[in-house]
Structure formats: C-alpha cells, structure tokens
Image: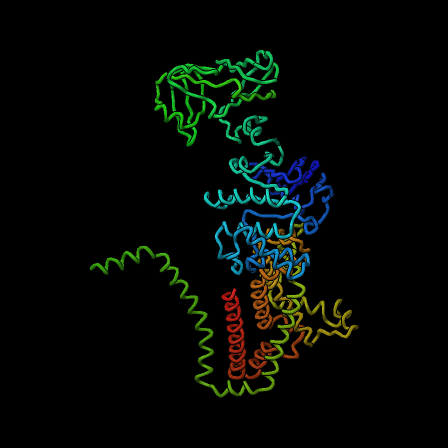
Length: 351
Length: 273
C-alpha cells in the first residue's frame, strides 16, 4: 500500500504540489499525464531518490519519507531501462540479490527463476547493448522483481517500444501483477495503456493530481475542461442548466437546448460528449435518443481518427471518422445528429 | 570525359572539406616539422651524442625523477580529485561555477606566476612551508617541491576529465542501484566508478604527461634535484644546442613509447568490453 500525504517538492523551476493519494495493496494504479506533468518526479519521490519538501510518504504502514532508497524495498523500472552496461544480463538481475547478501546458490536459483518468468534465459551472458528494446525492458523488469519488492514503480515502461512489443509486454505486465501479488504504480502518457492495465487511474497535470478514478470514470466523467481535452473528449460545450427534474436536466447551450442526465442543479456547466456517442444519419433515427438536431453540413475537417463536422445551424461536433466514411458525407448533405441524454457528462463550471 | 566530369562534381561537392583539410595540413606541417626536424637531425647527424646521453647517469637520474615525481603528483590528483570531481558532476550548489573557475586557473596563468605563487606558500618561510617543515616535509629544493608544482599545473586536467566522466554516467543507473539495495558508496564503486573509469584513466594520463612537461613552475621552488626539463634548460645555457638536444630527444622518445603503449592498453580494454 502506498500513501502520499500532501507531498510537495520543488526542483529548479518545476514543482509537485500537494499530492495526496492512497494506492491499495496489490492494486494496479496508473498515473496518467502529459509530458512534463511531474509523473516521473513523483515516482522518484516514492522510491526515495528525492526527499519531499513537505508531506509524508507511507509504504505498507511505514513512514519512509526520510528513509534512503536502499531501505525501501521498491522496484524501479525506467523508460530507458537503465541496465548496467558493464554487466551481463545475469549480473544485472543478480545485482540486488548480491547487495542484500543472499547466499550464492539462492542467487543463482532466483536469477534463473526470473529469467524464465520473463523469457530471457537465452540472453543470460549477453551485455545490454546487444539487446533489443523489448529484451532490455524484460531484463529491467526481471532485475526489479528479483528482490521481491513490496511495490513496483514503472516509469513509462512501454513508451520506447514498437507497438507489437508494447502489446506483448502489456500482457506480460498483467500476468506479473496477477502472479506476483505486487502493488504496481505505472506512469504513462498513453491513455490506451492506462485503460487496459489500470484498476484505477490518477491524472496528473502541471504537478498536481487532478482526478483519481476507475478508467471508465476518468474517460467519461472528467472533472473539468482540460481533463476532458486530455482524455480525448472532443465535444465540450459550455452551457447553463435551466432546470433539473429528477436528474433530467435541460441545458441551454446558447443556440440549442439539450437534455442531459445529471444530479447538478441550476447554474453554469460544461457538457462533455465522447465522439463515438454522437450518431449522424441522413434520415431521422428511430431511437431513444433525446437529443436530435437537424441541419446541413457546412464544413468537414479531417483530424485523423476524428472528424469535425460543422452544421449550418451553428452546431460544431466531433465524431469518429468511421461513421462519416460509412455515410459518404459531403458538404450540403442534410443530416441528423443525435445523442442520448445518458451519453453526456455534465460538470459544474466556475465563472 | 566521363571520369573528368565526375572528378569536378566530386570537387564541387566537397570543396569545403578540401579547403579545411588544406588549412589543417599547415598546422600538421608545423607540428611535424618541429618534432621530426629535431629527431632526425639528432639521429642522423649525431647519433653518438644520443648514445652518450643514454648512458649518462645524470640524464637517467633526472628522467627517472621526472617520471616518478609526476606519477606521485598524478596519484595525489586521483586520490583527492576523484571524489571532488564526482561532487562537481552530480550536485548543484551555490558558488559552483566559481569553484569550477578556480579549478581552471592553473591552466591559464603563466607557469612562472604559478612558480612564484607556490614558492611564496611552500618556502621554508612560507605559511604552509614553515608549518610542514616542522613535520619533516620540506618543499624547497626537494622532491616534494617538484611534486607540488606538478600537481598544481596538472590537477585541472584530471579534475575536468573525471567530472566529464561522471557526468556521462546516467544518474538513473545510480538510482536503480540504490533501489536494488546498494548504499551510496556501493553504488559509487560498483556503478559510477567502473563506468567512468575510461575517462578517469585518460585524465590521469593527461595529468601525468602535463607533470612531466612542467618546467616553469618547478624551477622556482626546486631547481635541484633537476627534473629532465630543468636539465635540458641547464645544458642549453651551459653547453648550447649540442649539449641539450640529445637529452630533449631522449625524453621525447621515452614519453612517446610510454604514452603509445598506454593508449594501446586502453584501446584493448575497450575492445574486450
């Protein structure tokens, strides 16, 4: 279990501010955030490479805030693998066991076990510079796991790998988590990675932990506009709740009014809708969708996997490219845009 | 016809490198002319003088003293300079750039200035010289004076090389070693030191060479016992070129042999790694 209490740390012109977080035993927790948001620094604080300016860090009930890294029993895997270049694979993996003074036979046994767990037994005598990225990452994981750490800290472990190797390692990480009974804190900027692996996700931006929740919660119910943008919710509307009856709110977006399911009462709000939840059709759909808007296509902009569709009624929406392609949509086509009241996420907007 | 055109295309493409190489060859010519003129004149025109020098006890003693004193200075630089270089490489602290500038001072000041400064500090009447004399360490006209002068001028070379060496070791490696249970000292000796070793070795070699070549700073504090550069100067003033050149050639040849063999040794290490 990892507990951070109000941790603040300043380094040069960057700071981690008031981070409080509780990660349960054997949880797979992903810290998600854009580059330069302080994710790595937070991991290094937990590992003890830096001492926080204020706050406490507690691992399995022990206050380790001022404990040196070598006494914390924390496994660390860097994005650059950080294998010791002057040692063979075997020597890398046995390093931690040797510093802990295990007997020789025990070390050999454990190294063999780790190498077979990570499928790298055939690399035992090789030097890191002769290995591929995926192989190096496996060695790095084996080295961290060899000493039976109470928690495993992974700093962008998959970012430097090709997509195919990434997929394989994602499966292996899941396997390790299940078989080794270990708490894992995994840092990444990759949302897919976070969604697949995480029990819970913590979103960090500009040195602050801005939202913590299940993958589902984070990706469909962001707390504010910048979180929504980061997690890829392209449709963000500013509006005002006119009324709310039993959780069904009518929201004024200026030119349009929509229905949304929310507990929030009257006041200024953001409305978030994921691109895949808006359906475009050339004929009115017979569906339960409460929100249907009719209009002519004024402009189509290709944004990669997402399309921006502007309608002549003033509505600007982002939808998945696939749905546009299937309809062979072109300017001047008459279309219906519809989405369910439950497909929206509403959050209060401060003036 | 076709070949000719290709030649001109090649010249057009590479004209910058061609001009730069020509400039470079002028410098090379200057270096080679200076060294080989002396070497060849001595070996071809008066080989007997060179042979006489090799059996001259005074010359052998001074060359031996030079190599030994510079070795001692380098040893001190390595023992005291390695931890210092590590701190400079790994930490930021106030006045760090000031300290780094101080380290570079011996490189930029004239050697006679260094000699005067050392003499003022280490002479029998100097602040440190008088204090150490009571412990039996005398610098004036002694081996220790020579070592001190050599250390003063050569330590920046070692410090800078060692600092760059430690800087080239990714701090992540030390962090990981620490997380695997190694204390700071163990991480230093098992990770940082072996990985920076090549830089440290090259730095020590440069410092040693620098010590051997020192003359200006040494004569102020210890004209005697004579190191080889002092002997060469002394013979030049008393016997002219004919008396000093064989000693110079002999010292140069010895340095060549030593440095080339040490370089080859480091090359071999790199290959086995």
